[in-house]
Amino acid sequence: MHEAFVQRLRGELACPVATAVPLAPLNTFGIGGPAGCLVTPGTVADVSTTLHLCCEARIPLYVLGAGSNIIVPDEGIAGVVLRLAGGLSEISMTGGLIRAAGGVLDRELAEFAWQHQVTGFEWVYDIPGTVGGAIYMNAGNNDGEVSQTVVAVTWVAPDGTIHESELSDLELGYRQSRFQGTPGIIVEALFQPLGSDDPDRIRRRMAAIQALRQSKFPPETLCAGSIFKRPPGHFAGRLIEAAGCGGMGVGGALVSPKHKGFIVNTGGATAADVLRLIAEVKARVLEDSGVQLTTEVVSFAPFLSFA
Image 1 (cartoon, rainbow, N blue to C red):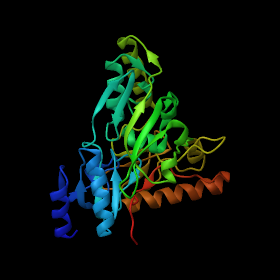
Image 2 (tube, rainbow, N blue to C red):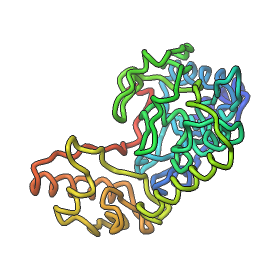
Image 3 (cartoon, helix red, strand yellow):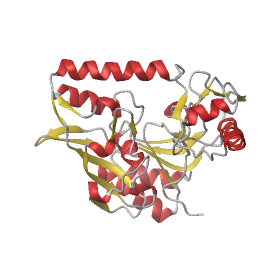
Image 4 (cartoon, rainbow, N blue to C red):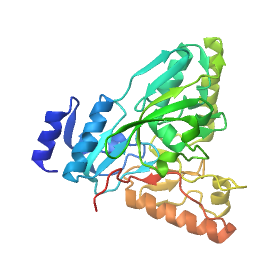
């Protein structure tokens, strides 16, 4: 990373700018090399300005939330990483709607709703992501989905311009949104609660959902959640188990014996280990059942690229 560009970022942004920052501690897999430059924006203006400067200097830019659902490359990131978690963190209740910045953690959204005695967010209590990431993926589980409560989204385009989109324009589907085809950095979302309830009942539902997830999923902290999307008419974990992949490992990466749809870092796993294991599992499942698995977890890719 050129020192002159870093100094320009520091001169024009009112937020932390750091260099050579390890990314492994900032993602749930605990893998990957360092970021050439890490920007933690405190405002939407910081996001827009960073995009403008990267475009002008033709510096690749990556967007990082809580670091779940991604695989950071072993060599790290040579460009700028814009980390929303820890930066864009404002959340408020206005006119019966919850307004949450893109870097608000899903857990924080659930706790805020509980504190304000509103429902529809209990299911995100144990999801290790951010509001921005949840909308990008239309996150969901058996207890709920983002599309049930989101009303509108504010996002920043690659050229730094700021836009707003209502629910009807978000193209939300199973683990899909418009942002997977039309790039945009989600900086704020407006949510409509499903109703109100006694806070004790809300808290009990949150605790029950968390306990159920913890009983089903691996206890290891270093994993990225479900690796594969659910194939139509099937469950990925069952297909993986039937193909004899339970407990299969490559280096420090292991198919979890507890939930076959998860890959865990047993210690010292690399991105190369994880990717090789994913490829092997997909090949074995295809041979055994004829089903082509597709990944929910993605390799950390640039938001702006100038190759």
